[in-house]
Image (cartoon, rainbow, N blue to C red):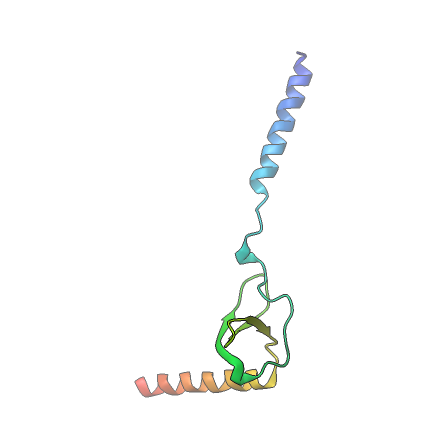
Length: 99
């Protein structure tokens, strides 16, 4: 084989291998869990609430309902905002009582 062809093949192999090492697969952790949110979820149907914040996604609120279905709730919902304020104030009070 010609030296130029060998050099070109070597260059292409190095380039392709560099592209493979730099490319990062999108893992499930980097994807946003909530692609759409609900504004109305009856509070009495919620069994558990999870809060997620990942670097590539906005603040996400996931509610597990009593029927084992998981839904995403809009974090700007009024009752959820009040729930968060109450939870934060309880945490602050308990920390003040410890000191």
